[in-house]
Image (cartoon, rainbow, N blue to C red; front, side):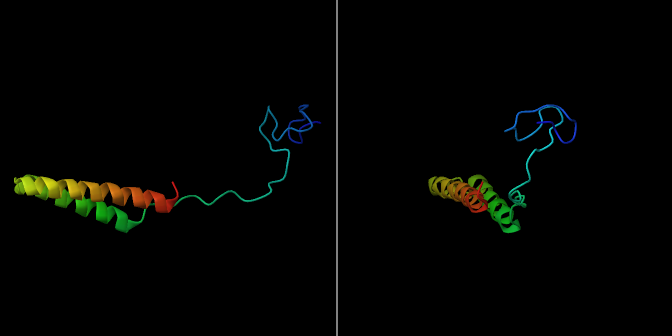
Length: 89
């Protein structure tokens, strides 16, 4: 069958023309909506966790502070993971 745009002969079951890229069928459904930006609260939570982690690491040089620092970094990682999971990425 010929392409409707450039008249190149293409296969009968072709979805697009190999020469000009024009679709040979009508779109059955609309494409998915574009993913928006990350929520502002997520970035605020990550920034707060980073600041707390740096403060704990720098100003409280005791063994308990290392444990608290690890907990804060783990919380930050979980927050990022949860935010990505909610977005569906």
